[in-house]
Structures are given as C-alpha cells and as structure tokens.
Length: 180
Length: 180
Image (cartoon, rainbow over all chains, first blue to last red):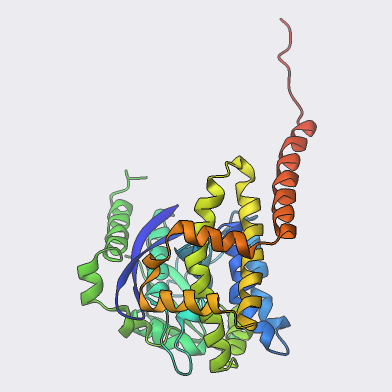
C-alpha cells in the first residue's frame, strides 16, 4: 500500500514523500538510527522496547505499520491495531476503530534546543492516512489514540476531539476522531 | 465494498484528505508548521521512555545525528540504485539491509573521527548542492567506504538468503493427483 504526499523541509520547500507499508529495511533504520542515538545516554534500555511491537506488526494480522519515506529513509512511523479496539465515545454500540498504538517522527524532525525540524508535516500526514485506512476497513474513519504530554498540542491543533485523561493509560489524554 | 453508499462517501472524503497532502497549493495554504509546531507528535504509552530519553539529548548530540542522517540521505538512494544493478533477485533486500547497516556504521565512525567527506556531504545537503555530487562520484565514495570484509559480508548475506529460499522448498509436501 502506497500513498504519495509532499512534506515541507526546514527551509520551506516542498519535497515528494511516500507513505508505505513498513519494511524490514525501515525497521532496521528505526532501530539503528532513531534509537541508535540514545546510545550516547547511559540508560537507553527502556527506551528501546517500543520497536518490539513494531516487529509484531510484521507477524500479526491485527497490526499494520506504515512509514513516511524520503530519500530511502523512514521519517515517521505509525503502528495501528485494527481488530480489538472499540470507540470510547459511542458507548451504546461501541463500534470498532483504528487504534494508534504508536505514532512517532524521526528525532531529526523535531525542534531541538537550537535548530528546526528537517521535515514538517509527517505527523499530520500519518494521521490523515490512518483515517483513510479506518474508512477502508469500514470503521467510518474512527481513529483513537493516547497522546504523550509533549504532543497533546499537536492533536488539539489537528483538530482531533479529546476526551480527557485516561486513568488506564497513566493519565494520557485520549483523542478520538468521530465518523467522517 | 462500494455497494455501501455511506462507506463509499467516507472513503471519498478520506481520499480527498490524502490528495490534499499531495497538493502544493493546499499545503502552502494549510501549513503544517502551525499544526506540528515543534515536531513532537508522539502517541502511544509505550513511547514514553523513548521520548523522555530524546528530551535528554544535548544540542551537540542532535547536531551530530542530523549530520550523519543528511549524509545517509545522499548516499542511500545511490547505494540502492547501485545494488539494483547487481541483479541479486530475491536476495536483494537482505543484502541491501546489511549494506545499510555497514554504511551507517562507517558514517558514524567517520563523523566521530571528523573525516572531511562527512562534513562536505552534510553541507551539500544543507545548501541544496547535492547535484554537484553525481551518482558515479558517490558510487566511488561508497566503494571506498566499504572494506574488503564488508564486501565479503554482503556476499555471505546474499548467499545465505538464497540458500534459505531454496532449502525451504525441500520441506514442501507436494500432493500428487490420485490415479483414476
């Protein structure tokens, strides 16, 4: 599955990118490069665990993983679960939805202490894609996720309706797109 | 799928969303800068330790990583095209993944040793002068970077992958048609 998009560089130019199914090659890049940078820290172990679930995506039908690729490099990743999660908003029928297990952008696409992101628009593109996938699956475009505190602003601005802190997820704020 | 008009309409809406992400005019009018702001877009409880660790990186760590990734962005497409020309067939992916790992290790080592070519390529990326480095020149650079041991490792990975592909058929149970 592939979807051509364009994203903005730090200097303002638009460049072609591709949303595609995550391959072994992308997984390697995430483990070696995205997480490799943490080797400079003293206690990186816990921070490595999340790629385990990405590996599951290649073996279990209920998971799907997609990346935004530019110049052969994975710039952002989304891992979705498509069978077990249900809407937390429509409590009468509890319809199925696409649940975002992970959404993350490469470390170099974040504003650092003194520099700007290399590419902007990766997160927005992956969220658009998740909605497309939800519609395809017959879930009416419903998508749910728990945002990290540093990213809540992004989901407010998308805008994606929020339903407050979820005590079952360490108090992370739950966001859910209603039907298209 | 399309015999359900509501679903067809939802998919059409989601498609429109994806088309907008590939439309320069729409992208200019709806800048991702305002939505993504600082590029911290992470969702998923499992990402918390990783994101916390990224926050602890120094400006110098981030600068070094960006430099290495920029060099990789220039070299990876050339490496891929070059390896495609080797006609490795189904073993291409395994060999290419190994080559990427080796290349990234060399770039990290060269950056640490402050070898000039890393800075030179990173600068070309930043200044938009990548065209000054034609594929033939970059292939020569790649050939210089990879050691004899690396070449042996690539050949071994490709050979082992091909061997695995052939041997898995030795276990195949073939059902013969029964005589009438």
